[in-house]
Amino acid sequence: MRIFVINPNTSKSVTEHIRRELEKIKRPDTELTVVNPEHGPVSIESVYDETLAGPPTLELVRRANEEGYDAIVLACFSDPALDAAKEISDIPVIGIEEATMHMAAMLGHKFSITTAFRSRVPTRDLHVRLRGVESAYASTLVLNMSVLEMDANPEKAKDRILDLARKAVEEEGVEVIILGCAGLAGYSEDVERELGMVVLDPTSVALKVAEAMVDLGLRHSKVGRFARPPVKEIK
Image (cartoon, rainbow, N blue to C red; front, top):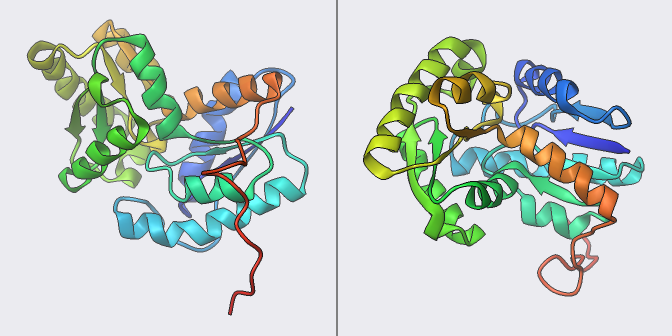
């Protein structure tokens, strides 16, 4: 099968990081293409960034459909333009946030999510309600590190995650930690070993969900929410 992975920001370093980690876990018969737009924000840390990233990301979604890929992974934890991508795509589009929140809710009573800055906490709260997993959500853990800093300084990121996760376990009874950034790809194994609990790498989760969906022949329903948009002239 052929899976098209889109990093919606323009950081080639983050894109290569994602590709390197996914190559380690993909099935032998899975062919990966990992790309980023040429234009847009270098990192996504606000709703403004998400909005700017949307149009170039959707162009890549169209490309994946035209080139005969079997599924798309949208590798940004905010899932920018995910619903629009599902509308225009004939193949499954898996957002790493959506897939991993549902997975976390299946694996433990309560989960917490890491995020870059405190300003992103309301977005996490809203998205938990949107995904229908509010009853399993405990908190968002603020790393105070940018996406690019997480990518460039994994040891600092892991130490910060460990400190916050231990407090969440003790104070909130958290059983699952979601690493809420594609730039944290590959960090979960070390953090899980230190914590002795479930730690989810969203990009890895989404890739495996994509492989399973392709195997099962699943597609997004086109009768309502993800129906194809009307064809119209755009000026």
